[in-house]
Image (cartoon, rainbow, N blue to C red; front, top):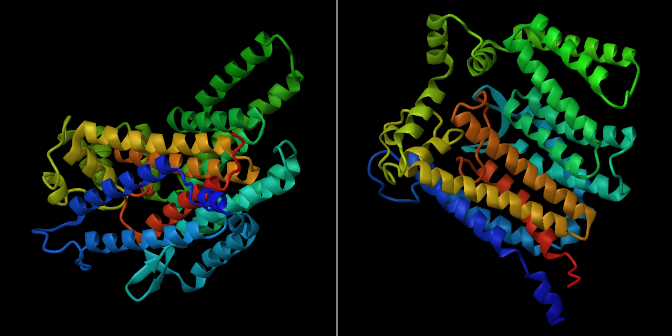
Length: 426
């Protein structure tokens, strides 16, 4: 009995410590980004930092609830949790509240809840449940389509709510499928399509077609083993050219002007310096201010609560999507590096623990957790530094908001609970 109780409370404290460091450092930066004038009370709910402190307090209540449930609960009720998440997303079309042009929130008085933040862990549970129940290795097309459907449904619902940033997160499950046996050809196809899309926009359809023809010709002539006939290579060429042309049409006729401008700025598509500067002022104001804030921090930063651009509110939405610019200005290169190390350590730790799991459900779920954190971290920091187009996506445990904080906490601590339940053979 004593041994059973000891096993029940044997959590991975390295993961928990990393979580505590991230949530603590995240709060300090929200405090810097949101405070105005002298701080009279950290519990002032009229200020964002006061609200965030309450969110953090409720987070620990959520953690206790998650860890108090049996690990089997999450596997047994994964499908029901997923269904509830889907119904919550559907309900937004009827009862949702518009915030910044996205119908992604339920409003209850002054409180707002964003279901898409909770749909991530629900989808991760559903994917893990399906793969583990069938003991599938993702080799058959039928299984691939079914698992893809589990991901496609919430992603589509979120996209229809005009929340493209949250939709992109669902691409992270591709890494999970690859770990579970998805053929390498899919990875090559995805990378090729990304390259084709960029080339098609940057160079145009005709130059892209010429480059693609040269590459496919070389592959056909110089491969030692001639796989497929020349007609298959011709078909591949036609598909590549058609895709490149389709991306061009999608960019010009489907994307909204501000979305076009963000991609144009990222790829430097505009050749006219005057128009480019005008576009930067109109569409990249947040990014410009963010880059200037980060660069002004230097090696060691200006100090906690001493960031002039942060306290001066030069960076819009700094407490949410652009919170990393506060880190760069007030904590400098070394502080920013510390945050990067914390996130990398957390992701690596989750992957390491996932490989130790005796249950396929726990392993698949663990990879889903790591992949979601990786995509959020990579896209948010890349966006803030201008390395990728601007996308509204929060930095886990740093960006202001209760829904995001609770969603990421639930995502992580379900895995902590699953890991504590694994059977040790040593």
